[in-house]
Length: 287
Image (tube, rainbow, N blue to C red; front, side):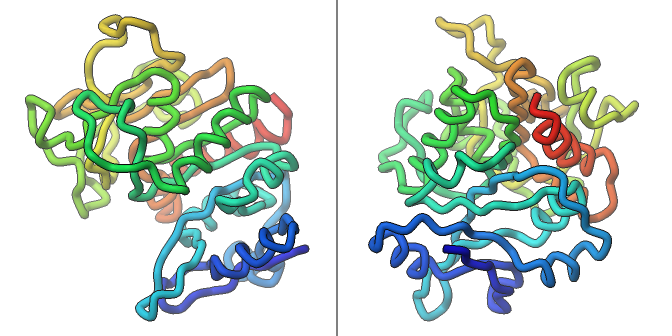
């Protein structure tokens, strides 16, 4: 069954009612969730499909209590501009839906993770959305699927790869600098020269301004301080307080970014658009 996302005026983005997906699951049907070609043309008039990219949908709740799966417009614009043939993954059918994808995006959002991710565990129970991300990670780790993880998605991959998190960077970090700021130029990030991220962004500027919308964060401890070396490398640090801002595994084509490059790419920053171009091109080449 093919289902299409619709424009949701209330949230100013595209999405679909969760109940529609749930009904399919109860009937034993795995839906193919996509976006109509006419809507794609409205967003990117000269759109050209390159590779099938899975995107785990976010979630919003209407004022009347109706729950929706959603995707932000800037994610759509950046991915479609890169040539992504988007396939949207829900939390019930991810194992089946991800199998037809060539690449994957794990977007940001606010939801609970397992307690063992943290130095000081919060008293929270992981949500259904988290387990969808965990299943996706197991798949990409096994099949070496090119993956871009943003904000919360980046934190999950980092934690599942051996990094530890602050539950509250302002309360637990000795430097106590806030990282949830409204400005697109919230703080500067230092990209490590020659790193995987540096090669992808193709920027000659070692220090860049980024947005910042996270309360939790990867700890800034040198990776040598871990009992077991994490399966990721750090690619960028916050200039002000040394908090990790990007990490990943170049051999497995996994890139994790703490800020939101889709917002900056949608505003015309080519170095940020290069991140989405990398994902689609790498997925297309099967690397």
